[in-house]
Length: 131
Length: 186
Image: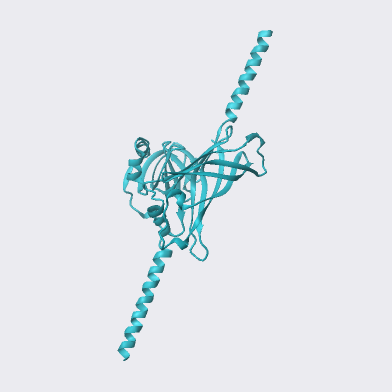
């Protein structure tokens, strides 16, 4: 009799924990942390820009939502954004752009968001500076 | 003497031409904001914001264009973001939304620091479908740039987006899209 009560009690607790875990997974699961992810490719800003210009669908399939590491020269700076090699717009999470200068060569890691044909720029967000 | 005055005249004309050509420039916003909301009462808010939307306005003709990359929409709930990209928008196949349109009866020179209502008429292209949009925007000048704000409604069906019956109650039939652009000359 007492054993049965323990079992029911135990099942209830397990049920409760599962419910909490499911709830937590659905409503509070963490966003990707791009800064801590490994880059899947390492290339130059010119290279990725040319690839998007040549065949956008193919480049989109290759790079969309991927963590990319790229090197390029800063051609413009605006708020939290810099443009690398006149072809890639890189958005930083923080005010890192403050210490940059035009013409400087930097390497960054970020998530490729796609190609903007109005500006003719590849867009990368959630970026961090590598060097 | 006469030749000199004609020369000055031509010079003036030329100068005038050059200045009009310069004022007929395009204003650009690289970091425009678009938020959409499809929340239903009592359920978790269905809402996302994209903070790097491109908008271009030709001040001479009133023509404008805008582009938003789908992966740039950020949700508070990461699972919702995943579903938005994978099941509804299919952003790998359709990575962007584009708008092309025109501001009706728009006169750039009459625009002041006070908010003016301007009607915009154009088409949104998303998921290979086009939808006519006509809405009123609030526009004003501010420190040499143009602030443009407004909202309009679309339905998932406009773009052939099917909402499965299990989540139908949680997603509104009408999706409100808010836009907030700050257009500057570059």
